[in-house]
Length: 348
Image (cartoon, rainbow, N blue to C red; front, side):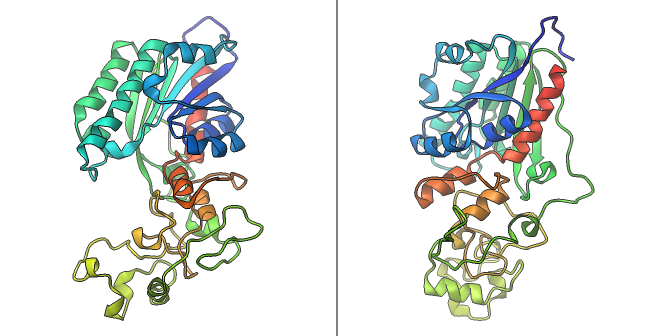
């Protein structure tokens, strides 16, 4: 399909904003050679390198030069080059009102644009929150305009990860671009609403209590809970119950008294549905529908990772906050796998 007479061996990729390696692992499993992951967050390095065959480069993207990229690509002249980037997304969320943070993080997308212009990849992949085109749209438009100016075929849309074998309701903005042919968006893998569920994914994990870590299942540990939160869980029906089911008004936090919204707070997961979006605080019971469907605790790190579609053997390192950030911020590897397969269609 490639409009090029040269014979290429495959695709190599560089993963910007690599984090714990969700995108890298998915692309690798699809058959794309990920040369390196680049991220300013040094706390992700051990997790990334333990689970991936790629090296991790701790560097601010603003300091990454075209020379750095071309050095990584040395020896891969017979491969197409994919530059992938999933810039920290909070800057484009409609919930973010911290202007300094917003400005700093939006600049990351423009640094991604700069590296595209300077290194001329064959393919580009970008993932972010759905609001990227709505809040300060000129930033995103500048990014897309640069692709169009440089003769890329671009397709972009909001997708839900549950259609790509991820047991989770997670809407993401994705962009695919190609220098060589008319790019298309990948088709849904799961059809007829036969989505993977919480039960499909974590039901067989051994039971643990709040504050416990399983001795044999890596990362299967749950945060401790205050006594009042244990009581709240005891009054929350199994399999999808919420705080609206509590009969004891004394259990309702002051900030929720008389409030009908925020129904997911203090809720339990439902066995028969995909999980709600796995955030960086999924291990914290009060911050969302993060309660186990039956056990009186929040999700373990293992459960959060599996619901993000990380392979069972993927290991996370760091403090609770670090592991939560690594898992919650990741591109779901199974979705990345299917996206990688989609790119490979264009070189055959």
